[in-house]
Structures are given as C-alpha cells and as structure tokens.
Amino acid sequence: MFSRILVANRGEIALRIIRACREVGAETVAVYSEADRNALYHHFADESICIGPGDPSESYLSIPRIISAAEIADVDAIHPGYGFLAENSHFAEICRSCKIEFIGPNAETMKLLGDKVAARSLAKKAGVPVFPGSDGPIKSDEEAIEIAERVGYPVGIKASGGGGGRGIRVAHNKVSLVNGLTVASTEAEIAFGNSSLYIEKWIEGGARHVEVQVIADHHGHAIHLGERDCSLQRRRQKLLEESPSPSIDDGLRRRLCDAAIRIAKAANYTNAGTVEFIVDKDGNFYFIEVNCRIQVEHPVTEMVTGIDLVQQQLKVATGDKLEFSQRDIHPQGVAIECRINAEDPRNFFKPSPGRITKYCAPGGPGVRVDSHVYAGYAVPPNYDSMISKVIVHRRTRDEAINCMRRALSEYVIEGVSTTIPLFLSVFGHSAYLSGSVDTGFIEETYS
Ligand code: ADP
Ligand code: ADP
Ligand code: MG
Image 1 (cartoon, rainbow, N blue to C red):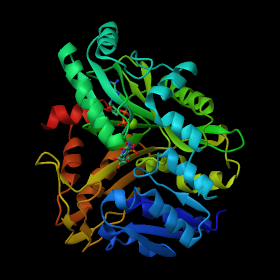
Image 2 (image 1 turned 45 degrees about the horizontal axis):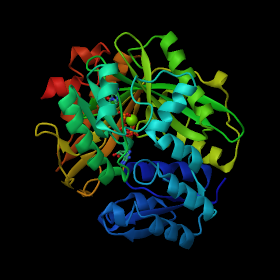
Image 3 (image 1 turned 180 degrees about the vertical axis):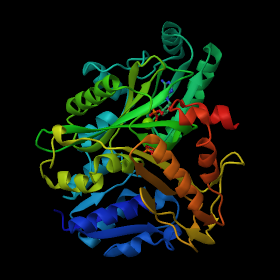
C-alpha cells in the first residue's frame, strides 16, 4: 500500500477518499483553496496544504500547484476524485513523470476514452452498439446536415471533450443544427479547450440512463459490479441514482454488463470506471461514454455489492490483484442515492450558497450520509452546489423508497435552500414509484 496519498479534490469526495486511506493505513495529505478554509475535511487528513485562491483555475485545476504540494508533502500517490483534474490525461502523465502514482487508469487510456469520438469508434469495434451518427469529428455544416438527414432529426450535437452534462445541444431541423454547431463549437473551445464536435441520433422520449461500474487490475482481470439507473436528471445532470435499475430485465442487464467489459478490455482499462449507456423504450441500448474515474454515485454500488470501491482503487493502483472474481459478485437488495444540492428547486434551481445555520443529518437502519458540511459551515459560491449525498439500502425497492422518505424528512439543513423538497415530491409520483421515469421527467413535470 502507498504510505502517503494526496487527495486532489474538495468537499464530500475528499472526505470519502481520506476515510478510505485511513482504513487501509495510508497517510493523507489534503489540499484546499482559500474559499475552503472553513471546510472540515482537511482536518481529517494528516497534513493539509492551502494551494491558492478560490478560483478553481488557481487551485484545484492548477497542475503546478497540486504537483508542488505533492512534492513538498512527499507523497507516493495522488487520488483525483471526480471533476477538476480527474479526467485530465496530461495531469496523469505529469504525475507519472514525477514518479507519483495517479490513482486511475493509465494516461493513454484516459486520453483515448476522454475523446468521446474515439470512444465511440472503440465501442463500435468492440461490437457494442452506438447511436447512428458521425464517425469522426464534424468537418463542415454540409457534412453534419447530410448525417442528420440520414439518421433523422432530432440529433444531439456533442463536444468530443465534453462532460458533466455540459456541451450538449439538441437540433430538430437544419436551421437549429447549423446554428447549434456554431454556438456549440465556441462553447466547447471555452469550456473544454477543444472545439471538436460530433453528432448522434437523439432519443426524445423514453430514454433511460443505465451505466455499469467496472473495476480492473494490472493483471488482466476486469470485472463489473452491476448497473446503476441514473435516469432522474435535470438538464442532463444526475439527481438520483439507484441499483438495480428498475427498468431492465436480467437478459438486458447481462448484455449491458458484457458490453461494458468488452469496452474496458478493448481500452486496456485499469482501476475503477463507468461505462454509460442509453436504453430506449424498446430495450435497445447504445453506448454513450466512459467516465475514467470514481463516480459521484459510487456508494449505490458499494451498498448493493458490499465492496468499498475507493479502497479497491487504492489497492489496484498499488499493483494488487483484485480480491474477488466475477463469480463472487452477488448484488443484494436495492440502494438509492439522492444528491442534496444547495439550490432552490422552487426558483429554477438557483444556487443557494451561504451559511448553514442548523444541521442535523439523518441516520438509523439502512441510511448512509456522505457529506462534508456542518452547522456554521458556509457553502462557498465558487464550486458545484452538491453538499451531501443520502444513500439508503434496503431489501426491496419499496422499502428503500420508504427509508429514503423517512431519512429526507429527518434531515435538517437551515440557512440554505436544498433539493430535499423536490425528492420528497418525486417519491409521491407514480412514474417514479413504478420505476418508469425517463431522462426528461423532471423538466416535463416541474417546469
Ligand atoms: P457523475 O456521474 O460522477 O456525477 P458527472 O458527469 O455528473 O458524473 O460529473 C461529476 C462531477 O465532475 C461534477 O461535479 C461535474 O460538474 C464534473 N465534471 C465532469 N466532467 C467534467 C468536465 N469535462 N469539465 C468540468 N467538470 C466536469
Ligand atoms: P456527459 O459527458 O456530459 O455526461 P453524456 O454523453 O454522458 O454527456 O450524456 C449526458 C446525458 O445526456 C445522458 O445521461 C442523457 O440524459 C442525455 N443523452 C446523451 N446522449 C443522448 C442521446 N443520444 N439521446 C438522448 N439522450 C441522450
Ligand atoms: Mg455522462
């Protein structure tokens, strides 16, 4: 095991990683920005280093600052968490040249899969269905129009380097396609430093997001840990995730998991990763992307499989063999996660940063809360608005929903608005209760 690990992140995931390190006996080094001075997570680490101002480009996204902290603290590995530098292959390469282990896949695999156009071709070659669309980056408006007419409108315009639900536009006709391409390439250049775009058939109604967790070691073993259903989204960002998916049968589950493993093997994948698919209302599935990192919703898989994914990431990165084979994986029961964001669902989900005046987290049987906040903590305006994740694990889906209702109604967070009332409303909705919401449900129901 590594002796000292730097956690290149903030918030709940920084705390989650520090906890895993402590359990496997590795020392931890936390980094924080000036905007995170009041955060508690860095007090759980053995050492903590302020790496710069609140603006992410001068702290959590600054490779020189993170690497300097790692050298000063003399660590042997860096865990990037999710977001920030987690999917930056250049960062992984620099870690390698500094002889610091980057806890994730190798830089080449990250580079390949981080390019969503290249990932699409890899999936196709591995015999996994992808949406009909462009085979490479779009070179001209004429080419895009020709493809859109061939596959039929609507089409999604996506950034090759996109992520986090950003950089996607839907075009319903030629005019919106041409306009969309111009705006999207400028946006993609600014957001991802890469203006390259591709298009694919867009499913308008009945689309479900189902993804498969994989983990692979450096000894040729790649296994899956089942799927998560993340169809409850707002603006293509996940709000709630559950496992198993209530909308697929065992046959489809097997095909999705096999497809994910084929992609992981074709990409020479190591460490934890997620292969994402869209399932249509007829049960056809299409690969959309691979996320080369730990996912926000990983606890859902941890609850049903009993496997600590972050500890496994650390072990695999040190060169250990996976401790289990596919035959050992038997997911039990149902887990659901709600992302609690400091946002006002009654006011167009406007971010609601500020001081938390009163705080009391839920507990009791079946409830897990992953959060870094406390009473008196000021949620900074600089970052993602997620302040907590509530995860429940029960024998059946009905029991899990009842448990989540109970947990959310116990949860006291005062001073900032949160998405809790939205979830309580969703749990009263027959579409959610019957397991049939699609990715457009929130927009259709709450706007
Ligand atoms: P998950 O399934 O793990 O939630 P998301 O795509 O929602 O995956 O991303 C997790 C976090 O990483 C979010 O905070 C999101 O804003 C951020 N993120 C993901 N990809 C990018 C990217 N390319 N650029 C900036 N932020 C990203
Ligand atoms: P990101 O990298 O931003 O996570 P994804 O390609 O994973 O982008 O897509 C994000 C979300 O957009 C999906 O979860 C789904 O809701 C929607 N989506 C993506 N592709 C399609 C498609 N072809 N048809 C319908 N919805 C899609
Ligand atoms: Mg995605």
